[in-house]
Length: 442
Image (tube, rainbow, N blue to C red; front, side, top):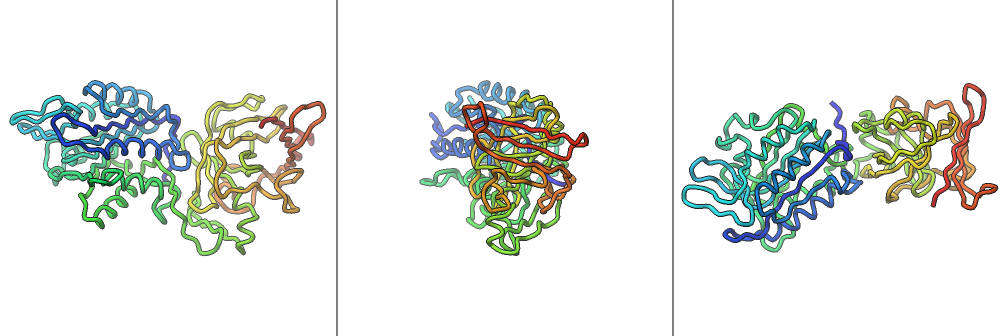
């Protein structure tokens, strides 16, 4: 089964952390955990979930504050729900249940006070309508949640969550977690952030949670630190909330080792070709469900051209000149690390034309506009096609296209207009007519 990236605009995350306590030891690194994890989750080159869909609770005073935030996220998430907690884990002396500590928590001889019972969080997560769920616990004794009130080795570990849930804990049921004095992050979260930022060499274009877990466990073991634990239900280990930013292994400059089709991309014949050909301009786009949709070409530092009908079908955008307000997720499959980005449709065609323009929210480092036949950036250049469907060679990361239309594109001043504009013309329509799509923008 091919992994697909969770759709950011229909996913939600709640990040909870407590670093200062009245009766427990302070954990200064936890505050950094929250900022670092939010930064990496909202980074469009990693996952790109919108910042407004990530709620951070730093020092929540009451358990209900946490439960309310998780409930809001659980209701809003349709694709993936992520719940993260970092702080002290407390074990009830009488029941053995795990509680997550709040700033005023304390442990008495017979009970835990002013803390949040993890089972309440579990119930809300389990009841969410999100198709995929990820729970990350960075606290002492967090492995207890994998088997309810059972021991670390209990076979009931997979009974704690419903199907489609991945739970990763920073420690076993009986082990403390670790926050090393002077380090920016706690041990587990620091490794997690590094993996999301840097990727895992050879793991493919997206990082499945089981890959993230294996990499985290390996790195922590090499440092003699507490080992994380994992519980997954059915295919939950394949949940992907990050692109793989690790450089792709290659046998020649410009080669891409893992295009989505599973076939290796055709390598460039020379370093010069890799720098000046389609490798730096090829764009692969994803549908709202995270599946490969088709391809396009980078026309300038931040403008992408593609087939309008493909975008319209996938994102419910009609070819009437109306512009979609939602983000489109894309990446550059032939660049090292397969960098991702978010873009917005700035022009849908008029009068049945088949060319759409998207504007990148941020230019991608290493990308270059497609050159014309004379080696100049797009401007009066003619292309066989600007985009292609998922079944074509370009969409799978290989050169060539099956799209029959020929498209001409240029940027410049138009008569009776105050600003320069992109103008694209497609020839080869069944009617034999020539259609144009124009967008004026800064």
